[in-house]
Amino acid sequence: MATMVSTAVLKAVPLFSSFPEDQLRMLAMVVARKSIPRSTTVMAGGDPTDSLYIVISGRLKVMMSDAEGKEVILTILGPGEFFGEMGLIDDEPRSASVVAIEACELLYVSKRDFKKCLAENFDMAMAVMRGLVRRLREADRKIGSLALLDVYGRVARLLLDMSETVGGEKIVTKRLPKQDIAKMIGASREMVSRVMKDLQMGGYIEMRGSNIVLRDSIILPE
Image (cartoon, rainbow, N blue to C red; front, side, top):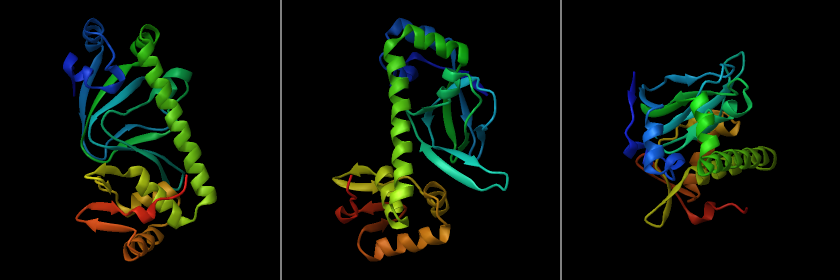
C-alpha cells in the first residue's frame, strides 16, 4: 500500500538531495512510498515502463532468466540506489526483473513526473546520467572479468566490489549466499563453494559470523 512522503525523507535521498525546499514540497506531492515483502517481484522483464523506483531500505536483485528458469543476477541494489530509469528515458519495456531479497521500503514516481523533474532540475538529470554511466562501467568490468578471469578471480572481484571499509578492513557485511554469487559470476554453486573454501584456507578471506573479511593478499590488479 502506498503512503505519502515527507520532504525530510526526500532530502535524504541522494537523487533529490540538491533540491531546494520548494521543489521538495512539489516533489512530495507526486512521490509515493510503499513496503515490499521479501521475494516480491517489483518489476518483470518485458513489462511496460511506468515508474522510477528509489530504495529507502532493504536489498533487491536485478536479474534475467531464460525459458528454462536459469537465472543471472546482474547486480544487487541497496539504500540510496534507484532503478527503472532506462525505460523511462528510451520508452522501451523493462530490460530485467527486480526482486526483493529482503523486506524493502521503496519510493516511486511516475514516468510523466520523472521526466518533468529531469527537465526542471539539472542536478537530478546529472545524477541519473552518472548512475547510467556507473552501470555501463560495471557492465564493461563484468564482461571483462567473465572473459579474462578464472572463477577464483571472478569470486575475488565480486567480494571486493561488494565489500565496504569497516575499521580499516574490507568486509562484506551483507549476506551473500553462494547460490547468488554463482548467479552473478556465471559459475556453479559447487564451484563457488570450493573457491570460497580455498580462499579461506589460503588466508585470503576470513569468516566472522555472516561477515567476510578480505585480506590484502586478495587485492587484484586494476
